[in-house]
Length: 417
Image (cartoon, rainbow, N blue to C red; front, top):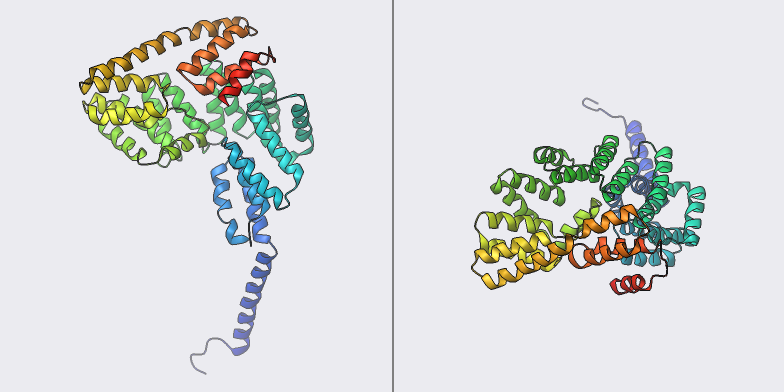
């Protein structure tokens, strides 16, 4: 027949083929094949430290399964642990456990949570070493948590050995040199830390945490132009609130107040929770509300003291130990003519500066004699009151390495918890 393209038998074969393909896809889906592939992708992303990528894959899980899968709950718990949200981690692990997830996997994750915050004892360290031998699929997770815990406990040589072993097994992983950079920063070796961060970035240009750390150190060294180039070259520069804030800080240092203000105003449209979480995702657990401080300082420098007071009061209320924010807040109050209130803030700044002036004295004593627990305690108290709760707790815990039964330290830690 003129115009006829397909014969009836060939059309029937095509329809049968299409129907067979649909049936095969349905069987694959119902048998859990799609879910298994997705779980594999999540596992690979987590293994490489790419939590946001893993979350992207996890978002597909409801479409690939009927009900909530226990392994999905476990993966979500692991991401929560990475971010230090141990309450959420524990809740998710209990849900996974109730749905039949293997108890040994639950035990491992709970052990890693203790390890990463430095709650190490002989029993847990024995478990960690056993897991490193018997759980190869979790080797990198174990190394991350163990090295972090050792560093948090001031056992830097032991942490370095873990990092070297990790790097030996996975020479392309950017995280061992990144962790080494963290340790070197704590030891006040900024140039060596910068070198380690650059090594991490060279292994994975998309490892934004390393890029951010490079820019931060350059900015601290007053290499503003280079820091700005580093931040602007970051793959997630446009979407990352910390990087946008850092770019604005660089622009402000260059005198480009208008563009810096525009960026910071946009950052501050996000909730405080979103802002703080964005720093945690870059492994920069900030205590200060940095974008509010930077925006307030710009407004103050421009003579817009009413706007400055708004942002700087927010920053001081959020973190009262923020010396930079408090000083800028006092300047803004003075600009508004609120002289008594300004004087009160300036007095607090003076007290804080006098207290922090002794930090280097105690640091030098500790470097000369690491077992000087009295200097460690005095340093911890100064930091707790005047600068950083996190750093103060770190120094308190470091005392227990040399004096495990120190009751004053144990009571302080109990009170802080």
